[in-house]
Length: 559
Figure 1: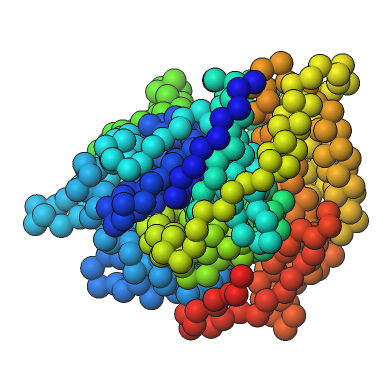
Figure 2: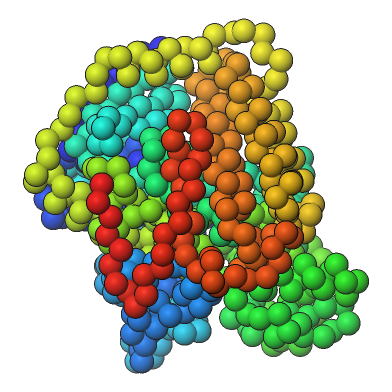
């Protein structure tokens, strides 16, 4: 194993949507040196890897940023940070225009105006959106990208970040990286729960299977305050292909119907969680399967749908072709996915202020890993990357880089060497991962229990996850690729424990399916119209309740 030490002004962990835009912003507004560490390859990494066919967060004509705040607040039943949503929403249109300047094709009408889809969306040709961002970053003179480098831990002393440790997956190198400021932009967490499809197809899921909650785990272990992990995200998707349903619902106005042809979506409500809950309930009560009604749409709409899905979920287009029937000839069956933890659709993530500063001094968060601001999607992640970048630049003005001491480095090197030493481990990483998913599925509200749980089940889940964490200490990796898998498992296990603690702490059911607590089946505004936060202290997760800030008043914290 080679050992390498690097220094930079700003370290960006994660070369996805937010990370790329943060680097772009720093480079264009300062001469600071930037290092991006990306676990995969920046050209096709993150949630935009395969492309998207719409920008789902945009302030269309006749609307204002506050309208978007109100929409997100309603969808999350008030548990949002209005200050974060507003500062994000104010930048949605400017980052969209910047994307177009970089080369993104945004569809326009005969008058040269953007073609909208609904009240907040724009149609795009977005199959190359990530390569466009990656190319922009590649051309920056003061930005260096390290692909295939997996960051595993922060180095924090006296609540001040000094940098991070990581492993070079293809060059067998251990990295110590000293940085004055760090922007964490690694995305959310998939793979905590058993997925819809087993075996060979287990990675056919809504959220990228390579997003393991690494940023969350590093923050949790470093003592950062986290928020709203109990607001899990469950996507309503096309059955088997796990393709998006929004294109059907918004693109052709497809309604949710049960097997009798009854429209049930208005019966349960139209928020994201209610759409999932209605589908689960209809199936439970014997009125399934459930569908999005596409029978009877036009031939032109058929072709538009098939092309749209080729941009982002080709398996759905292939399914229509293989069946020999167009969408107009058959309704599309739908189902909920397993739960995810993601701050881009729900409010899970780091507790940050309006500058996207975490509670660890010098550490900033952007995109799916930043909490409090749901429904951010692509443009919201860009906006937060921009905000975090400006904040990091300001931080450099009054702070100096701090050296990482040899004791911390040696400790991490020994940990890595331990995993690379063959000790006849009784279990493989894959076996422990499967065990983790089984535990979460059975005891922490997975698909198996229709997303429902009670406190006794959560206690069992926590005990079992803790046991798996201890077993993971003795895993063996024959190379650095397998070493990455070990760290990914450990990241997921860390996030699992926080999810369980948060689910248990919110003693109510505010979001059906997302957090369906059988011990407390009703909403409790008196006691739980507040944020559920947490911090790891001495190995235990301490729950912190914080009051809501109404009307967009900044909720700044003191590090």
